[in-house]
Image (cartoon, rainbow, N blue to C red; front, side):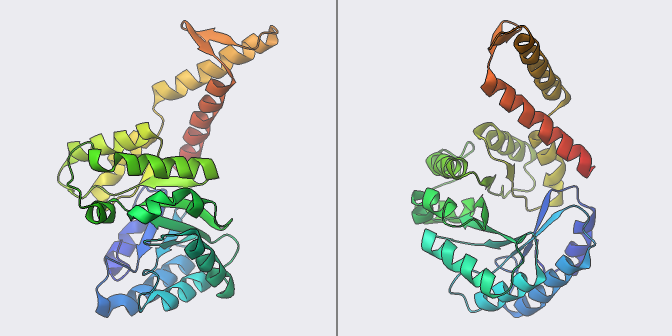
Length: 277
């Protein structure tokens, strides 16, 4: 959300979201950049946003505002600094060094936006470039633009890009978040894309309107049936182990360690959501 919009920053305190991206970049007009920077840093320092992760998206590398944005954000100490159009591992290392120089506390991580063909093709190198980097964020609007692609439901034009970035994030052990859905009036279209993102393996989705929050939470949060199934999988496997067997069956399906790991992740996600509520 635009950090120049104080009403939006106030509303953000009530939104049931996991994280907020306080934007200094595209959502902020050039003559409001200084105000947005001040507001975002004040919001981070305020302690008024509960358990929501607070991140600040700075203006891109090479822009006239980038250095001042990064220094101010590092000093404010948000949960993360989000940088648009990161294109290489060298840029990640330079950003991490700049954050260190500016005094960013250890808890302030780096989120790199992957928005260009070159970034997609080097996503694994980007994901592994620094211990400070914690998340890759898909910038799908810019990716469509850079590819010269046309949006259609199902996102066929960028499927390969989405999958490459997912593979990179998983191989490096960092989080990965899907891009935005632009038509805030198209509730069914948003739901379909959010479901696609979850099915693919994304950890979450970036949102541009409060009306997208509830349906997104509904898609990405484990439902009661999923939680119940996870509990049953773990119980069946533990019972098999108690009898000296390495595998179990549940409703005719084989249960192995990998299924138990997935079930435990489902329960951990449900527990984390319950703690936030």
